[in-house]
Length: 313
Image (tube, rainbow, N blue to C red):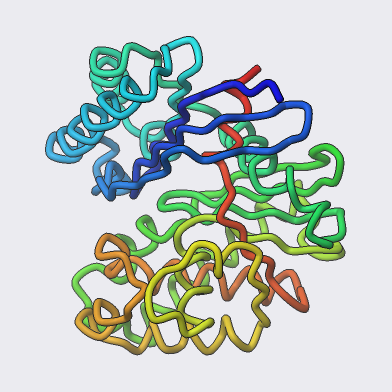
């Protein structure tokens, strides 16, 4: 078996993640060597100010320095390292400060990809193995991030894709900031934003009729872990779990009605998601309602895996 070792970095609005893996292009198998995440909140206040905050940049650069050491330890060179940045750095006026800092630390050019390319990478990462686990196509894949959500429809290839500006960080800052428990009015306002964004997505990507609905990223996996009642986060239990609309509604209602301390006490909750998970779950619930899907297939493989495959080309 001939494998290619790569390093992939996904820098989003809320988190920055690293995957070092050995890939076998002939079989489509991906063997993780190191997969980790840090919450850096790069998108802090971007929706309000249009700029990346200095403290957010420094948190992100500190994570990059840590990741640079890990990548070097596995012997991956810059020619097999790809750094992809998403919604927050697309939106910011001072994105050049971000690009320069990352280049100096990691020795690679960070790629601020378009929403459409982000969607393609998410689709590749999520679906490459689904044929082997009895998940029928075509798939409607959505990647629910901090600043945006990508929708992709396809089977063997992508047929349609659209990125829209709804995410757990963006909606929290717009509607739930400073509230211990979201009010009915703030929830209704957030739902109106989500509905408008789903209307935009539906102009390009049919949101009903796919054989399988596949959800990606931290909000989705966290809601799944809560619904499964896990005593601690277990990626093997979450990966390819199937949730009903009733399970998603129940967990969303619980999160929207919980205090900060109650959310923080949930065993599977990452500390960096405590303040944004309620808004993220609201997006998830709205997507399930709009699509009319009978179940949600949860995937731990997402844009990070898609970046890894692209780095092997």
